[in-house]
Each structure stands twice: as structure tokens, then as C-alpha cells.
Amino acid sequence: MSAKSFLKPTSVRLVLIGSAISLALAGFGIFSYANRPSPPSVPSTSASPVPDAISALGRLEPEGGVLKIAAPAATFGGSVGGSRVARLLVKEGAQVKANQPLAVIDNYDSLVASAMQAEAQVKEAQAQLAQVQAGAKQGDINAQRATVLRANAELPKAEADFQRADAEYRKAKWDAERYQQLFQSGAIPESELRDRVLTLETKEKQRQQAQQAIAQAKLELEGARQTLNSVSEVRPTDVQQAEAKVQVAMATLQKAKADLNNAIARAPIDGQVLKIHADPGEVIGDDGILDLGKTSQMYAVAEVDETYIGKVKVGQRAKITGYAFPGEIEGTVERVGLQVSKNAVLSTDPVEKTDTRIVEVKIRLDNSSAVAGLSNLQVKVAIGDAQ
Image (cartoon, rainbow, N blue to C red; front, top):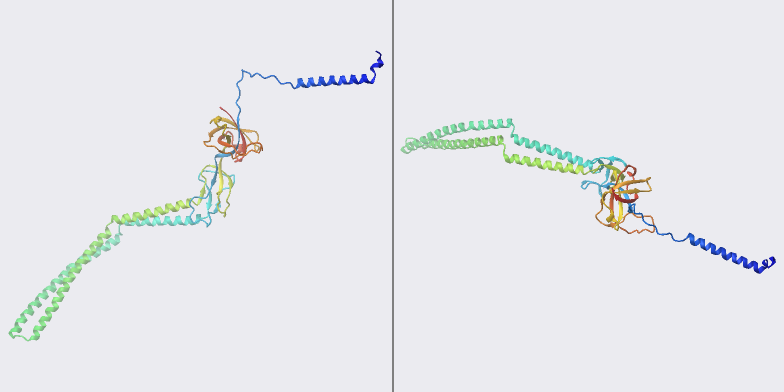
């Protein structure tokens, strides 16, 4: 066949179609070879498998959590509608010691006055007790002794006056009887008899008065002696009564001191002031006066899904990461919670569940300085094997 026959239009089309088919078959073969399934891998028997870490979201908090320092339980005499802060003694970020005063409540000054008054009452009661125990003053005792001596001297005098009055009465009686006989015999007139009878009546009255004076002297002497004994004697009942007054005054003082102490908000632990909620003059609300935390030792609280909590043990190591600090911080699982609750830390990933049942796991951080000021920061936690 001549060369011209190959150049005919029909022959040329057949050649092109065949070439296209050949190229298509070659391309399919290359694609099939490139995408063939890989042969199954054979696990190595020389290396042990490494278990996957348990991942969870969590938050940072100081040791013991964030403490809300509220107004003391008993703040008598505070402002109507709630207690107010009179003075703040610390600033945000300040490091404080346990029992250090943090704030003064507005009823402090009135309670100071009450405590001073109670202290004065204690001193007064103690002085009265000492006076009762010591008895009367020596000068009072000596004065009463002199009264006894005077009363004792009056009695013999009264008795002597009675003896004289009695003798005069007897003589007047004898005269009256004798004149009665003389009158009856007609030896004397009736007027002389009447004189003697009148004298007898007078002497009888004087004798009665002298007798009453003796009784009065005896009563005064006995009364003076009893008064002297009462002044000199320290009666147990008087001492007991004075001691009871001292105890009542001391109880009042202790209550006043307790009320005064309750007018000062104090730090329950060593820690750092994280946030102040009530400034001077403001009413103390539900958030309290300020937040306090022991930031020298920070913890990560991981919310571990209840499905995986059985794999978490005390002593396991964990790694904590977060956007607010570089790198990662390691720690040790210190406590695994004892109850299941709803998660509080939510992920920003829209495909993750928002209602998860979790158990809180507390992880003690090895290095707290990098995150001491990041309480409640959201972090990611990976819990691995026990060391």
C-alpha cells in the first residue's frame, strides 16, 4: 500500500482514536496503583504500648479554693439594712497572714465604748469584793467600840439612880403611913397628910422612871455590842454576793470583747487578696467584703468525664496548658472527687457536649508562680500514668 493511503482522512481518524484509548488505559492503571490499599501493619513485639492520656477541661484555683470574707456573724449596732465597711485595711493583691485584720465594720466605735464600760464595771465589782473581804474600816470599828463603852458606862449610872429613887420612895411611903396614923388619932391636920401622900406619889413616879432608864441602858448596850460584832465580822453571805457581782461584770466584759472582735473581719488563712467587693461606706452584699486565696500553692481542678474516672488515681502525673501562660505546667493528682455532678467548665468547640456528667479531680501544681494570679482560668488537663 502506498504512503498516500495512510494519509487519507479515514485512516487518520482511526489512528487518533486508538491513541486516545491507549492513553486512557495507561492513566487508569497509574491511578489504581497509586491508590491501592496499604498492606496491614504488623505490631512490634519488642515495645510495650503507651496508654492514652485522659483529657479534660478544668480551672485553676488556690489551695482550699477562693474564700469569700463576709461580715462577721454578730455585728450588733450596725447600720440599718446591713453592715457597712468603715475602713479597709488591705488592698487587692496584698499578701496577708492568718488572723490579720482585713476590714473594720461601722459599729466598731460604739462597741469599743461598750467594752470600756464593761471593763470599768469589773473593776468596781472587784473593789467592792475586796472591801467586803477586808471588813469595815478600823476607824469605824474603833468608833463603835467607843459607843459600846459609853453604853456600858450608862448602865451603872442608871442603876444607881434607881437605887436612890427607890430609897426615897420607901421613905416617902413610910412617912405617908405614919402621918396616916397620926391623922386618924387627931394629932395632925388633914393637910399635912395630903402633903405626905403627894410626896409619896412623886417618889413612886421617879422610881418607875429610874427603872425604865435601867432597861433602856441595857437595850442600848446590847445594840452597841451587836453593831460592833456586825462591823467587825466578815459574813460569808456578803462575800458570796460580792463575788457574784464580779462574775456578772466579767461575763458582760467577755461578751463586749466578743462583740468588738466581731466588728473586725480577719483573714482565716495565709493568702492573697484577690478582689475587693465592698469599699468603705458600702453595704456588705452577698459577695462579702473581699475574696482571699492561698495563691502560693495553686491547683488545677479537672472535670473528668464519669466514663473515664475509674482510670484516674491519686499520684498520677498530669500536664496543664492554657492560653494565658506559655508552655505547660506539670502536677500530681492529689484528690479524686466523691460525687458526680454537671460540668461547669464549657468548651468553645461547638461539636462537644455541653451537658456532661463529671467528677472533679484536684491536681497540685509543681510550679504555682506562673499562674498565681490566674484563679478561675480555664485550662486543659492531660492525666497520665502514676509515677
